Length: 254
Image (cartoon, rainbow, N blue to C red; front, side, top):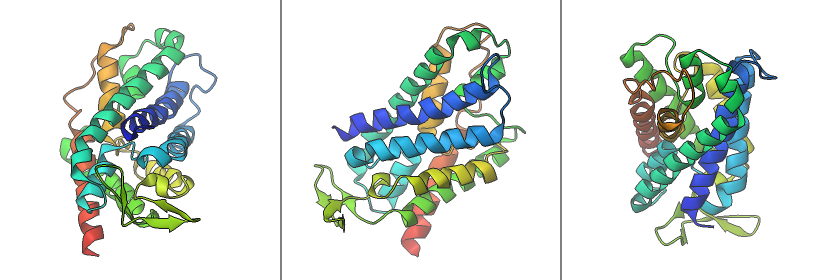
């Protein structure tokens, strides 16, 4: 499978689980209505687990532009692949959001509140102060990328797909990426971030997780949609990228 197709599929899986669990919790007349934050964080963690477990063998399963940029900054991923990966991840986020809307279409119509519907597609702060919101996303993504860099085994994926500086696991060469390890630790890392740091902003920690679905929200037809809140959209894009670069820089320094 093409690594770019794998990133599309992997990110779509992530959003299908993550956006789906939010829809189940916040939309009216669902089986999981009002089941709470623990359910949401577990849903996102399982989305990461399934996406990494299934697509890691093909692309490293970054499923997150911040992870891609972090790995490239640390010298563990080829820079010419960064933009195609990010575009693939954003498209995957859009597709995943559309699938969630299709699955919960009747419940979208049964829910009148616009901001509640937006929460399924993208993040928003509980207290809107852009400097604080930005810092929260920087910190959350720093922990994500820093953790990934130390959890995963080192290696390098080159432009032509050749494995350089690869490591051997069970007799097979494996390049650097989230797929280079059991997917469970990464899922648990995301679960922990959600539980510990998700309260202020909803822990985007992933530009594609927010931007792709936010575009879907703007384009999909449903009643009482309300604003897509583009004024806030730069925070869950730039905050994670800055956090990833800081994490990669500290990793390289250490």
